[in-house]
Length: 178
Image 1: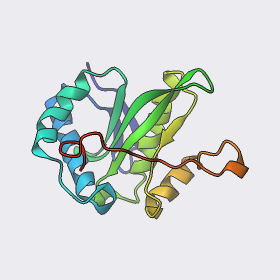
Image 2: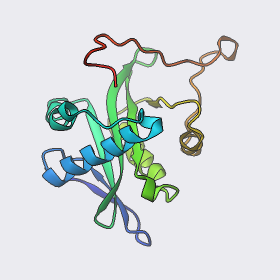
Image 3: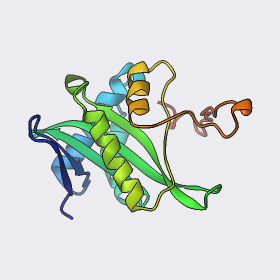
Image 4: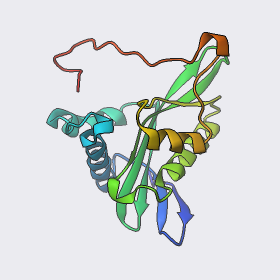
């Protein structure tokens, strides 16, 4: 499969390409960018486990609900967005969840995040999704501002009930926790 490319700005040579994990350069960029994010305090502050580095691409290739895009500045991978399709029972329609958004520290504040979110939105619209969702740490003010500029708002059904919170429960602490 040839990756689809979307030019976002000729002046910066930034382009967004659908991730093709069967293409070795894409697979390497994917793992390197995801590891860069994992090492950041907002990504947990620890490198990816070697078992994740060696199996993740293969496991994702087996899924039909995964879509991702990689950003390049010239020939340098500088950003990544990983999304998974879910389903909204309130609208009886699919949704697309942004699971990871990575912009390499050397390329932040250059529109990479907005371009990647735009690619995810286009993919969601092409899939007939009713919305995009994501999670973000409450003290990640830079990411929160990026998401707000892209049109994201807190999940609220009724203002009197408050906004939704993301909760988690690890099922196997020996292998699942970061």
